[in-house]
Image (cartoon, rainbow, N blue to C red; front, side, top):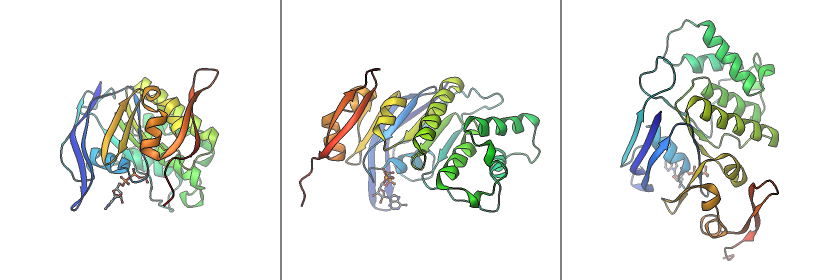
Length: 258
Ligand SMILES: Nc1ncnc2c1ncn2[C@@H]1O[C@H](COP(=O)(O)OP(=O)(O)OP(=O)(O)O)[C@@H](O)[C@H]1O
């Protein structure tokens, strides 16, 4: 099983430190971990640091074993918040290119089946031969997710992957990601502003505030009115639906107007 551990991890841009001392020793394949926090809390920076794209102190250790046949070391994929669009390619070509990244140019039947499977899982088969440049924002976001899933990563870092999606698509994508985490033993870290989705789909949450990791654990235990006040400056209640699902109800701002 894949394992990720963070020890004293920080991120700095030049002299400006945006995150310090993040410790998370036991992130394991099969779970979905939601990374939450206010705007500019450092969620994308932490993802970039884990993916090796940002400098900083501390240690990021990716270990354990991959469940993907033939893969000797676990692979980490990062889906950034803003993805560039190469308008010349079709959706299918862009997913094929993502799959073949750094690999041989020949394409096997199994790889073609994988692309078909991802298109089907995300319900975007009808987009396969459309040009990327003619897609809506939500459709582009789904294609970006497809480009990431087709690579079958062991650790998947998703930076606000549902921000452009309608309610149905949000539900479907988050359900799919959770199912794949379980089936493939994949560790998913997902940055998300919708706390109700975090409560529903995440096994654990990590909360960033004040340039630190301020809480980590069971979403139902962590997402409390006191935390919502501290992190977001809102007065909120955490209610329970008849089926037992918790949800956050924001009543107003808890910060005094200047
Ligand atoms: N390339 C960069 N150079 C300098 N500062 C940066 C850079 N990227 C991010 N920052 C700063 O680091 C801080 C954290 O930004 P980051 O994008 O990690 O936050 P976030 O939690 O993902 O925010 P949001 O929820 O708004 O997407 C912010 O103050 C931001 O301005």
